[in-house]
Image 1 (cartoon, chains in turn orange, yellow):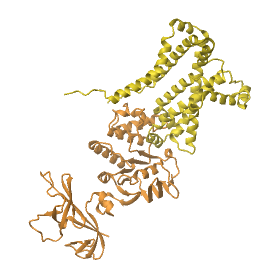
Image 2 (cartoon, chains in turn orange, purple):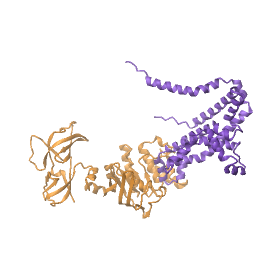
Image 3 (cartoon, helix red, strand yellow):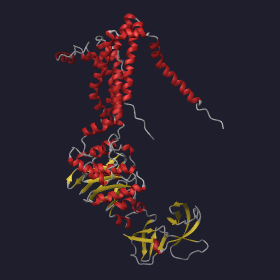
Image 4 (cartoon, chains in turn brown, yellow):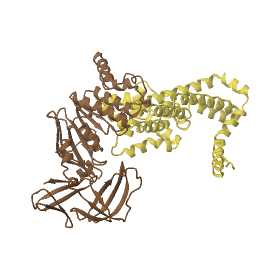
Length: 346
Length: 264
């Protein structure tokens, strides 16, 4: 449905570089990435706020809309900032999306007011609305313009948790009704819970696309892994069918067989790494000496950054203890149990 | 516990200096008001020439403001929203009438609209005269006062968030609809402030107008003439009445654009 090709746009020192991106009709595509990765610029290129240079192309249902004016694209955008017209009531804001005053307009407004629970807000001044109410009105107003694609720029960032959940329900409903959505966020969890397909952006490029599950299960690189929330991700090489090494000094012994002399990625679950008491030096495999570099609160426990030749994050459930058991410069021994290791070949 | 004084030495210094400036502005106005007898004011109010002159000043300045407003407000919008080559030059040109001597401005305008110029001749053949006519007064008033309108309106348009206008375009509205339904209503306070400033500045213009049209006499010219021909005693009551008229308009229009009180 939406096809983006060869976008190479430079804005000041930032460069957006998208070779190809396709989004099918009815998809809920979430573009996730940290701030400054280019998500909003890509959205604004699709909306027509910025124009792309040749050979860049944006096709909507096969029609080239690259040079179409913003108002002719049929692409509705919900901006990150509050864009309600402050001098118009909520009702007038929604009605602004219609060119003509007719019976059809009244019907659509009534339907949207019901869908977004706006009946009590229609006469209100936008300046008196809460963050969640603003987003509901902006969504209704944007949908009143009957867009083929709905673009959402961080729509949940300015609202509290309870309203966030309600808005997520609304967005899922909209998508189930067939509305194609492209949603931009810096929050992986938000992306994971809403997307039918995801793209991860980093430094102006889409570095990974796929279903949320495939991106989470098989992070393509260190950046994607970190963005997905993995704390310990390493590029590794298998030495033989029972051993893999991270660099030259840290090698792990494995119980199962793996292909020898291959590149792989290793994920170590920080919640399953164990501290070994200093009094009982362990002879277990995959146990390493290290030095605590940092210890800090990480709900609902304490996280340690430990140098064992590589930096490893270890999480400890503090239970009722509010202070870290170990402190920077403490010598510790940690053990990677078998179930803390996940190897992704290739 | 010792309560600290509410006013520090620095605050007192600020208040003193600010007070001096206010006194500088108010002293001549208070002086002229209190040194003019009520009887001379009532006598002057009944003077037909004064009444006609004040009416002429008000309507010529009002028409000049409204006519120039038609072109100035769109120009202010363009200056606030578009970046183009020579934009700084355009902004400099707009501010020119503020910095050049107004008598020199009058001479310059006269060169363009006098009967010797092609514009003056063209206007004359269409039955419109500038020199010695209200049309000329309006041109002179507009020339010196239009920067106040353009600059105020430009600042008002610049304060309208770009995203709000983009959102309106994104909803399918044409740029003209965005201008009339979104940008202008959101910038209206600044626009009306600019119109008031232009109107007030036009009313008080003397230097440029006196070159173009000594007659019919607008009030600033009448005050000058009474001062030259009859002295201070005769110029004072006209001045007091005109200051009162100007202030009334100024206060009334300012009240119209007063920001509503914000409740926390």
